[in-house]
Length: 271
Image 1 (cartoon, rainbow, N blue to C red):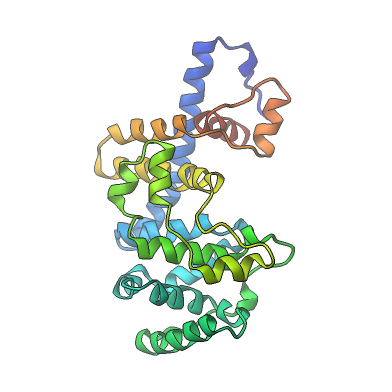
Image 2: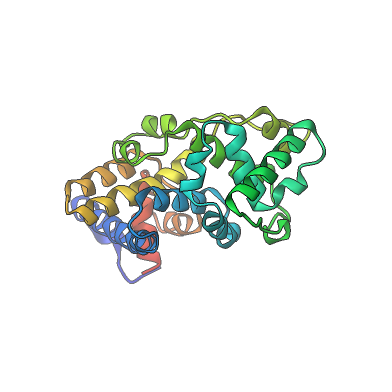
């Protein structure tokens, strides 16, 4: 918490403060995106790919996920994106997690495909032990996240054009609507198959942490400040997050209803 007494502000004053704090948070995230953009020699496609991978996986797997993005760059994926099998073999094979997928015909086919691609692109896979999989639910498993990533990249919906035009939950549904292979739905979920498409909560998280910051940062990079309004409009249209920061504020009578407000409160709590 901070020494800012939001409860004492008028409705208009509170609204203005929330907007200011949300912009601060977008700037904070923007610094990381700009650093990544610089590290990719100004390649927005590779930057978007690395960011998507970062925010798809759980926090405890982000370091290994960023290593995976370096091992299998976006340029290689685009050469093999004609088939979902090719993208899955590249990403999940390079992750080292194919060894955890049993001996089904589909898993064997992916291993064979990856052996070919690894030789073609000189890829040394990560160790499966690098990933944290202890005490997690199927919906938190890195295999699910990498399968989702593969489906999204194969679908071709994760583009700068689609990101910049996203301003509603419905637009996120279209961008993140790729369907998983049946194998992953049944293999990861165990006795109860997983849903083949990303749920609304997951799409909302990506909208907040991936889409809105890219819109803001891209606009700032090219000097078009109207993109700030677009990123704020998206956050205003998305529901608020429910986490330890928002719960703390709710105990003090401030309950956010939009992602713009929850992002503002998180920024105020972590300044």
